[in-house]
View 1: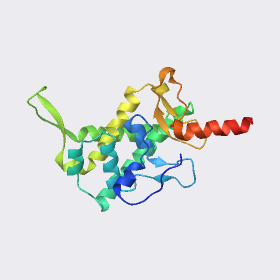
View 2 (view 1 turned 120 degrees about the vertical axis):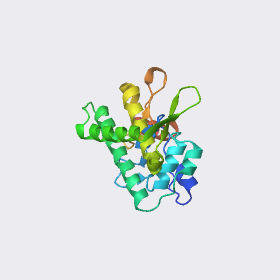
View 3 (view 1 turned 90 degrees about the horizontal axis):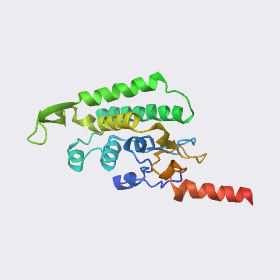
View 4 (view 1 turned 30 degrees about the vertical axis):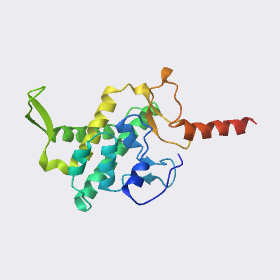
Length: 208
């Protein structure tokens, strides 16, 4: 997809996230923009980008996002690198499914390890209602919350969603994945205004 290439403020970076996925885990995969090209654009360049994505995707609330330390040193760099690796393992699983191939054990093992770590980062604390206890993130692992919520979103995608509903945009120059919730599951494009319109124009020119 043709994307806005503006640089600068975090609001500009937030606007460049691809929200066609219909599921946070697919939106995570789509943070590597223009993936089929020789120069893809990585919208998870910094820890701040990762935190902003998690908030905008609805994976953490605003209060939690505000409490997260604004890491810009080695720790933050390490966490966002792990998030990018997680994203690529999920992409490879989706690409294999889209091609009719089984997922590589390497990718599934990496995702499993990340999901286990995310569950292990939660602790139980007393709750007045409705249950006796609720889950809370371990304070010592607070900087990793954006990474862990992405891992749990991936688990929900792979376990809860029907594989036939997870599709890739049919435009040859687009690698955006989305959850097809259309009637009859006939959606073809990540965006009708973008790829859908371009493909219709391309077919019209080819037929004329």
